[in-house]
Length: 455
Image (cartoon, rainbow, N blue to C red):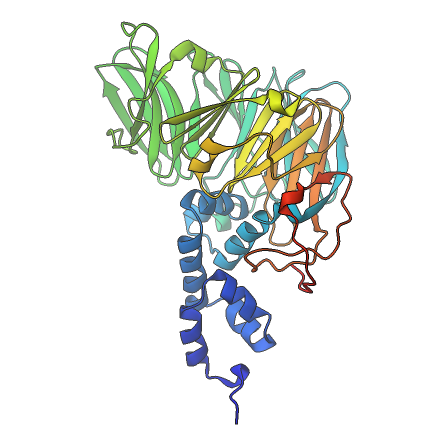
């Protein structure tokens, strides 16, 4: 008499799950409805198991990426589905098996797009020409003009209020509390609760303000001694630190308990030094500490993308990537175009080009960014004939969305799987080989078989 897996006691099933990795749990989900209900039921055991799977199989930076996208207020004790985090990561690992649908989401006539950001069902769009900040609901197509000022260089989204306290937003289905607009000489904070604004002046045009989870760091005095302000937005604690031996010229990045500062000494022949500190501004042992750069060249690079300890810098036809104090310079002429913007998310590096193509590279860890072959991309998306100036990603448990901003249009790229594959297989397999005109997959990444599983 054989014992069917469905008839095992729950305690035995949980014992089996303890020894399963993410792929095995995904396969168990497909065996029967009872296993599916057990694994997908939200309780203390399954949540702890999926959390353990994420911690063991995913890099910490990738976990933070997806958490910030799915649950922008995860650091305020928001309830997290770790299975959703893991599933999203596995889907991005299969990006070369997507067939996307590209649609022109918003047509603009005069304004040049400088930055786009997702928040809930909304896309926030900033422009350079007339300094317009507007929000468009990508589901209902509702459009709101939020603010108009001088040229907006960049925007980012802030969270500082718990979910149950943020019911009075001026827009529904938005997940952040503030939009921060970076202008040439100051920052403008637009409150999504009240619609009010506040202004933080810059001392110099290259001075930066950085924000991560509950921490927001800015320089308030660029003389000797320097005064640096660290605001904890969840409990409103302020720390003011005086430095006597050097001048802090820039707050480069804040991430995961660290602050990356750019220190400058006028006697050092215009050479600046990176320093990594904790939230109390005490220097920590990090590979980027004491890394030297030419200050004025660094501050005036055409494009800088800071991501959890990774710096991606564009300077003409040169792409420079710094990871843990190691540097690699790439020449982009291999792609027969100029790279105008970058976006790094959960192991996917997106390069927006002057020919309207987004090149996508996938890495298993941050250090792999130092050994890329730019001519050997994972796949590329042929979006339009205009230069791509901004890229952002909206995570979804079902279908991730990529937004691309050209000079005058916003495009949405939605994922649809062309291939019948399992997200839990080590090597996905292909049934059909009909290639979408928008997605191009290198032949080396195609596998053939008769797999019948759907994602």
